[in-house]
Length: 602
Figure 1: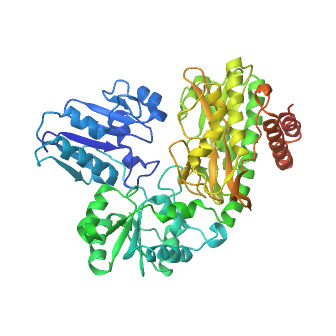
Figure 2: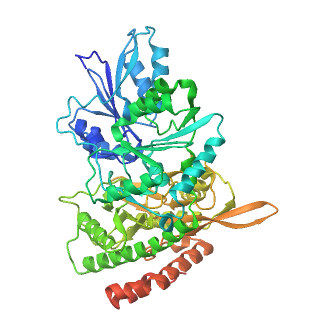
Figure 3: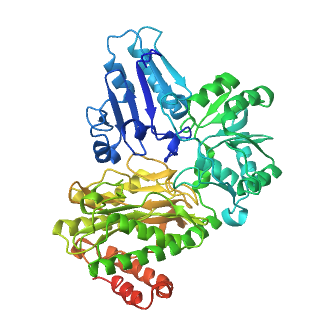
């Protein structure tokens, strides 16, 4: 910083594609200060190093940053300034400052906001933001390379829509945008969906790190990192894609090829989504095509892929049946192990569940890092289970497990909170109220197009009456053999995206008491049509998850007759659907175990 005369260096936890999970190459926060959370930004000056992150990671960040010299700035808390505001205040009295940032890992909107604050706060026009390729390359020895995994292709029988149909669809979208001649996609989930390809460049998400440019007569995929091995799945995939008109380029040629495309092929304007496009690439586009030739807006792919087609819905129903078998086998194993006095740690339990999922045909790994948390650990919504010296699960209180799998025919996510022994009255009440909240949302009937935020209140209302709440959203969208978190829908107070039939979403309210326990119940639901009358079209939720809820510690007096009816019907359906397969896997004892777990309550 001193040599280059930088006053501030900005480092992001994100990658050039604004991915939820970053490959090791872009885990700069961990390299700098030891912070491993998925969200955050670091500001480094000559006399301060600060990490900005949200409430999901406060407890984790405080523990991981201890002794590092990095100060935690809690976003959303009263008195916490945004990064641009903090920079302006920290350098108040200066005429000008120089801010360096990795342009490939910063969003266009953030850089624009920062520039506005600098223009307003510093009178000297010499204040500037330097977008470097990567400000850490010089310092980070043995930095991991950009990953390059095997690439596979999916066909219409698996995903319900060919890539040629998707190209035609997005070109129809272009035709509706004034003067639009091309669309640039940088979000990895959108590219995977458009090309019907999957890879393993990022943990938990089956994506290929790449960029995709679709024009009226060309498809350019910037993806190659290494030499392609002869006879590999990648070679076969590239050959198939090339035969269907997809031009394959090196990943790092995106900047130079955009210039060439703008000069030789671009006839009109290029459409981008500034929420996912990184600032470096946007600056290159402005230079190559001219700022006046850039159209910006939400990517049309986000909503299109969120509305699952019949083939995808069929796959989801199958995958949640298979996944339910694995989770029920796990719960059966855990109860037996604890009853026999075996020593089971949080890590042991997570590994057991992972191994049961791995037995399922079509399994491609977990959809996120399994959260296996006993007692106080469960009070952290994004708890990271220790691999060594993990806490033991004792035969008392509550144990929470949040997990999911990636399969060729779908993506799963499920949370169950399990009473593993006698529970306190507070644990019982929290457990009951969270289940009550989940059931209320499960039973919802609502007008077509209802905003997500209105549905959020259906889950929270009874918890609010008991003066309880939770800091995370109630639900997130789920991709098909894709990201376990996807938009545009998200059931939370701040999201107004309308719900539509075909959306697959989680339903996961919770209660967290730091140092004591945490409770979360999660099912995945499919939004389906529920008729039409003079008041319009109606929607409801169809539950996809197939795994029982433990009723042994419920305070049934807190549940309405309708809620009890829903719970009894759900547990009975789980028994009827799974019992034969479970008995084939585990023997006759599991039948009586599951029968006992799913008996109706009154």
